Length: 278
Ligand SMILES: NC(=O)c1ccc[n+]([C@@H]2O[C@H](COP(=O)([O-])OP(=O)(O)OC[C@H]3O[C@@H](n4cnc5c(N)ncnc54)[C@H](OP(=O)(O)O)[C@@H]3O)[C@@H](O)[C@H]2O)c1
Image 1 (cartoon, rainbow, N blue to C red):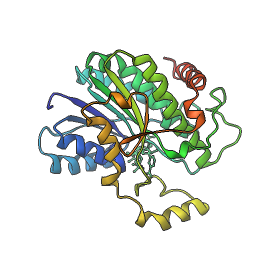
Image 2 (image 1 turned 120 degrees about the vertical axis):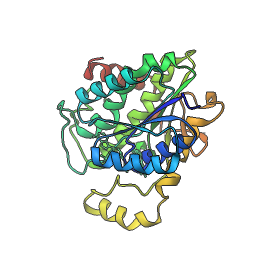
Image 3 (image 1 turned 90 degrees about the horizontal axis):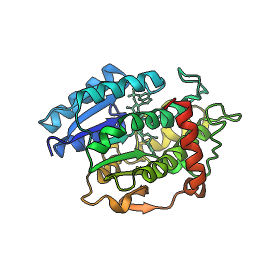
Image 4 (image 1 turned 90 degrees about the vertical axis):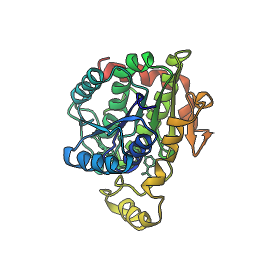
């Protein structure tokens, strides 16, 4: 498997770090995508020390900027003649309402529009590398989320968790719409809920949610185990049963009604393509 290239976003921390480690141990050429150079280099050392050869590579991009995502795609396409696996893992819960560099609500920009754009920019190379896989880290936090693609980047009502839930609903709808486009290509797209994992994701939360997170964190699943479902989908011998699916543990799970709405998935795709200027 040493020629197989695996790109993992959000590899500087948490679930992404251990996904990168697991893939490196499985012999993949891993590209660890981070945003912060120091943290990403620290993560690189962590993986390189534990995984042997081939050593991973690093690429940097702040997903709060679509120009940065385009720059990342160019770097990856010029460095790699094949891309066998893309793990869309980077994500955040923003404690305050903020906008991305493009003027879009930050959570949807980083968690949905950035991986939507990155995947589409890499898709030609991924198709050429088939059989290949695209794994997107969604969440059970999509449950109860409301999505109107027409207003998603400037929502009228905003809380950290409503914005996060909406972005994770987008991850599931994106995977369905993507898989419809990939039919017969040999590329399998799936998404997953990793469990509730003791990473840095809730560390900046304020108020009661932040207090709850800090109290619960010592009892949550450790990040090393939090990568298990991403690694399962990345390496399972036959990914066909997981095509377009939402997976928890090692099984296909049924997401919320909204996440199964084909018309909504298509409307999201069209609006996202317009927003990122595909
Ligand atoms: N932890 C859970 O319980 C849980 C549950 C369900 C789903 N998830 C999902 O799992 C994924 C990984 O999260 P985690 O729990 O491992 O959290 P984490 O430890 O905070 O890691 C998040 C990763 O995303 C990166 N990231 C954040 N904002 C970014 C930006 N603007 N541009 C580029 N990269 C950015 C972070 O980079 P920095 O190191 O620079 O911050 C980090 O590498 C997310 O998609 C999250 O929604 C997590």
